[in-house]
Length: 384
Length: 64
Image (tube, rainbow over all chains, first blue to last red; front, side, top):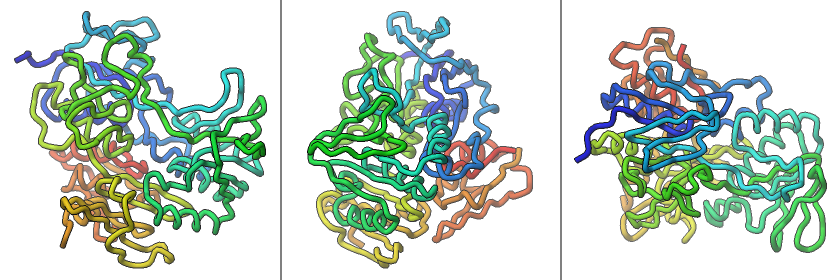
């Protein structure tokens, strides 16, 4: 049994990183915490970037007070190397930070489509991306969004709210990969009702212009726009871990204790995927999941057991003023139509429920305001 | 410590209630009641209150 750490380094000023630091203190850890993060805005609430911040010109800060109470040494720089032999992490400012336990919480980076020499591709991941996209949309009359997942549809919603004519392009229908065909139909109707043009591409697309001013489709046509935004998913922000042995092409692999393959190194949030523990857990880049994993990672870093699960199925989106909240295993939504629908999808006020013979259930609140506790309750009472 | 609530921003997710059930209460419609609006958070609830501020995904809570 290794001794309790005296020196914990948390890499990533993310919801996972800050939650882990908070959990360390909550569990009575009183020694050094170093928190490494290079975002000039510090810690903020990322889900609001594609919702509140894009639409509301008055929002110029998402700071919620953060973690002044936690006695943390913040390093305002990016980590660039982890040396598992000497147990140290190097930052680009040249400093070395030794650790007894490290928690990796560097999140994810947006995937990009532009060629290396091509300028002007817009992505949305951090506060500066959001502020700069908002300013750009203020002076734009048209936009093309590549990708009809949550981020793409939220950005399209923001375009509508700002009076910008928007085209969304993807090879699959909006949100169908995550929410299944029934809800995808609803989202598509909702979007069409707000004059969002949806183009289903038959193959890979590419960005044209330098700076980027359009999207070329496989059939030879080009969609032009004042602004082109790539919302084509994210990849674990793990390039800085190359050579450390803790990362592969899927990200930082963790077990259900949020332990990595390296002694004394734990991980949480969008940078991770479950390497064992089965159940097809895979990668789950959602806010609630980052919170759940961070608590487990902090407990494990202290050598303590954790009473809560290392995953959380809750997530949500807001599309054209309609809030969609989901609890329970997402895979259930893809297999079939829901077994129960209460309320009316057309009226944007419904609760949908999917069940699996093994007892699992998933619940979606579509346009109906319902707190997570109640939603989770409905998802955990299959067969009632 | 006090916690300020922006009720216009609140979307009724209820993650604050999961972090600090002694401070935050949501009804079935997701309407939030904050028990110490305009008052100091009791000392023994400060840590939970700060965790709730951190966990709010829409930045509707603020330490003041």
